[in-house]
Image (tube, rainbow, N blue to C red; front, side):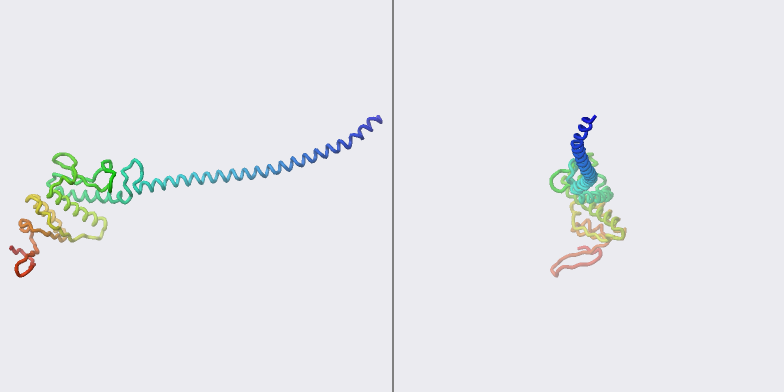
Length: 248
């Protein structure tokens, strides 16, 4: 009994040392756990911020793609398209309106033989300016032809029709703006008699709409079709001008 008590008393310092060491280890573990907890909280905050930044980046990338697509489209750089920039696209819409208005008068002047046509996008070339190209549709051959194949008289009728069509579109777009005056310099000499009479008829109808249509020409037959003439002539005394039906 006495030996056991002595053995127990002899182990006490050792146990106390082990207990103290265990307490120190426990404290160290608790401190490390605290540091890990703080680090975990920091990592969770960083992860949350990264996810937020990734969402922002994804949103910005989508916005960039939209803006970039608009930029490419507006500048005619979008692959797989006709390559029209925004300005040409808008001009093309007005160009089509001009052609539509021009064909109303060209139908009468050309007796329905041909019409003006805006070239289709798939038929546009890749060199130079494109989008405002003009073709001719022939009713006689049921084919599309180049404007360069028009004769002198046909070219004049087409040009006159386009000028009148442009005036109509501008007036309709401007609202309160009226184009009341138009001067046409020559061109009638390239027309045969029937075509000339048809062209004059169109101009006379325009003049009946309270417009002033001035025709500058040396064609004698055309003079006879004009009710009001401003005649200019020259002799040895100089140049002269007068209104009326004066015949030289």
